[in-house]
Image (cartoon, rainbow, N blue to C red; front, side, top):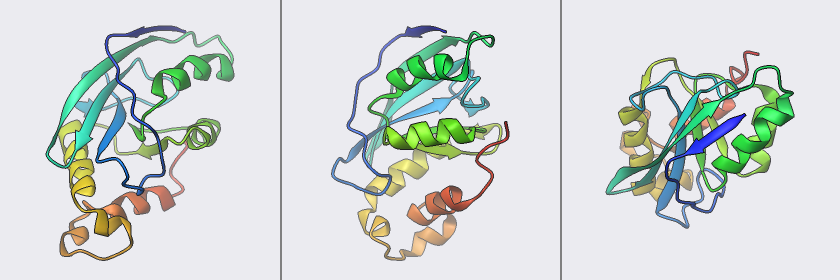
Length: 164
């Protein structure tokens, strides 16, 4: 696998709703940075964003040239190195082995529908960072709209994580 990192700044990875840091680094598997359209393991690119309650900024773009003949571990190792410091990674699908590896590294996989708008996901993370009380299990009025920690927990509880 050949990796090209244009720019990436690290951020310590912790559990999803731990809010010590008000600034999260997230990765999005995308071909264009506008929509999520890539499977985690076969993605040709990831966009990195630093998100905080006040907004977000793109911090880098990872270009991948996957060798589909390589073993699963051979493909995952450099990708996991590149994702170090991310809190979450959004993708359309992710296999069980990759989920286990991501979670061991403190990175929360977030499978979403194909072509989900990146800007909407960034807004959700921004909202989550601005409402730490939702992460402590309190129900805020806006949580019913699916923008709080409950929305993320619902995604985590689903079994639709892997479609190998």
